[in-house]
Amino acid sequence: MASEKVVDIAIIGAGPGGMATAIEAKLAGINNILVVDKASTHNDMIHKFYKKGKRVDKDWMGRKAEFEGNVSFDECSKEEYIKQMDDLLASHGVLDKFIYDTEIWNVVKAEDGLFDVKLSEDNVVKAKNVVVSVGRMGKPNKPGYKFPKAIRPRLNFNLSKVCNGERVMIVGGGDTAGEYAYGLVELEGMEDCTVTLNYRKPTITRMNPLNTEMTTKHLDDGTLINKMGVDVESVEPVGDEGEERVQVNFTDGTSEVYERIVFALGGTSPKDFLVNSKIETGKWDEPLMDEKTLETNIPGLYTIGDVVTDQGSIALAFNHASFVMNDIVAKR
Ligand SMILES: Cc1cc2nc3c(=O)[nH]c(=O)nc-3n(C[C@H](O)[C@H](O)[C@H](O)COP(=O)(O)OP(=O)(O)OC[C@H]3O[C@@H](n4cnc5c(N)ncnc54)[C@H](O)[C@@H]3O)c2cc1C
Image (cartoon, rainbow, N blue to C red; front, side, top):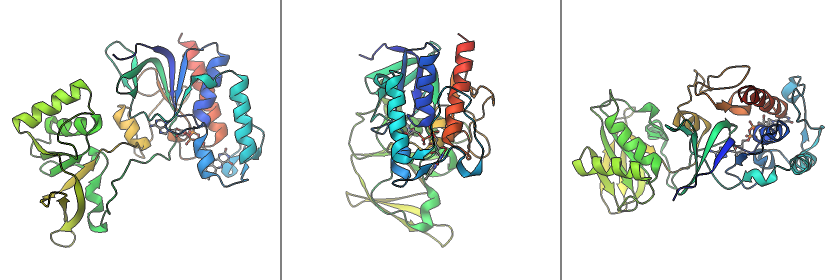
């Protein structure tokens, strides 16, 4: 049975933005929070992408920064910065709020007005507010086979490029694959698409009950073509130069031609996260939000840090955390 836990704030991402939000919440007297990160440590991007011994600048890339909230750091090396953050989180007593190795695909406001944050199939936490601080470095999972250059534009990770009339194959067996597959079948303006669902297993085992029901209904009535129980071995271009389509070679020796393949194999890009959470985005995929409070078009859902700007820094992410907390506190 699903967990009934309700938190005041769920924070997605434990980078500078997420961890500073946890500290700001604690200082504002809000203890019932949760921080979820797909990595196994806080500040994982800094662990992974900063060189050994790199100096962590306050005025990153020449942009002058002042700390406007309660969280700050002293300029130092990468290793010392991580130590400072370890100490800061420990001294504020928030480390037990952090859940690691857990990737969140989206956050959706349910009919009860609370956000569903799905930690696993049978563990959905409800949240009154959500702060999305997922940075910009996320990438969707790719299959092991090669993507030949000529057909790369036709090999996608969400539905945004699908055009009406195309033969489309969705690859995957989880909720996202199901939502993409039956979502596309039912999408207004896409009536002339032919949609196939491919999953290496013969039956649906990983979708929630609603997605299982919807996907099964369309598979049963034939509006969704069933290509389950077989894996893809390779993809190759077929057709005239410049107009190549995708020939998919399956492990059972069969092959089919499609205009587009959409992979839903887990792993989220920031853009996918925003789209899947129904957050309105602008021309450059940036979330549209109130510049002072950082609240998106969805009340109670905030986006902060690098996912909001291409000129991000640690200080800016820290400051965003305090702007959000001011708004949450003001609305309590
Ligand atoms: C090489 C390099 C050097 C830099 N040097 C400096 C510097 O000296 N000074 C400075 O101020 N700035 C520097 N920056 C920029 C700074 O690191 C970023 O602005 C800052 O880390 C942004 O913090 P954030 O919390 O928004 O995102 P991130 O630090 O990217 O954190 C995002 C977190 O979200 C997690 N996450 C992502 N998707 C999901 C999901 N779906 N579910 C769960 N968790 C998820 C990630 O694992 C990650 O831990 C540098 C950046 C780089 C790349």
